[in-house]
Length: 431
Image: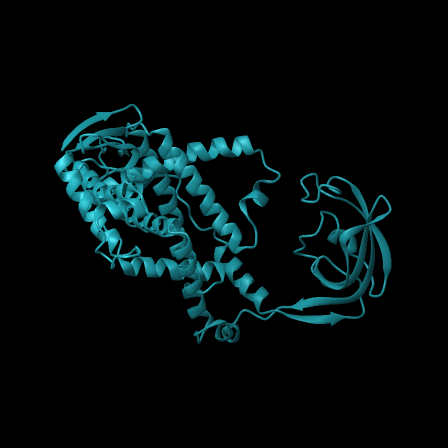
């Protein structure tokens, strides 16, 4: 067997391989024996038909394809191994021919990882704008707990204020025409936390129970419905009921309702632990950005376009998978977006991701950092809980789309290497 190798500008190795006639013929005979065991040829028992009869029955081309499938994977693997190629794709066959002299000519190619020199990655100083919890953070958490444990009480003797919840009937019109989906009965609206059109909830303040009135609003220019975005609208309103929140006192009794706490001090200590952890996590996030900015800036690497295009495709599939879990798809998300701008941004992000992933992979190899099955199980459980699905459903999605498993491995490896790098760096304040 002879092998001629040539590396091109796309970081691909072109492999011209000639398998000699003796080896090709032996592989051809073995293929004939295998095929004969699985075909029915009139007048012959399985596996007993002569080669010439078998060739007429299934065709020479079919047998030759069997030869390729059985011989080429091992040959290509050995060429890659013998030359210590670091590949990013499986070898692909561009051309093959069974020559008249019985030999087999093959032209294949394989894509290599970009070559680069890994910069110093331990002992780095990472200057960041340090995040510190605001002095009011504790009170904000306590107020949130009060909100969650508040109760609603019906109001009979006063007008609405901007903290009330109101039960309303409403019907909307644009240019005198009823808005599709713009009406409801007995709708409960929180006037203090409304996500309705700007100006809607505000005009319901200062109204009495059972009052009926009309308000004027304007739909935002970026509203999702093309037919009414940016247009003036009129809504007929009726206030059916007014409710106000009754807040509990912040004391030991409230602490007992929140969790396994006996006193308010125990609750506060738990909140402080959470606040401290959140502060640490935020500063690690900021340090991570600085860390990889340093590594990327210090690493020269030419990434071939096919790698970038595959990563862009994977990114789109990833976005689409997440959207599908929420009943949407990528086309829906990009409907009102500048597709050219989005694609250019994804191209740049893909190149950055590849470069980052290659750096992480090299560091992981240097430091013997590996992804274990328990890491994958934990990540599947975490994602399942995030999207409100069972781990079994997540596993089914992975089985349908193997790239998801690759993506999980990459995420976990990235987390492990990032932790290693942060543990071996010093986070300092810019101040």
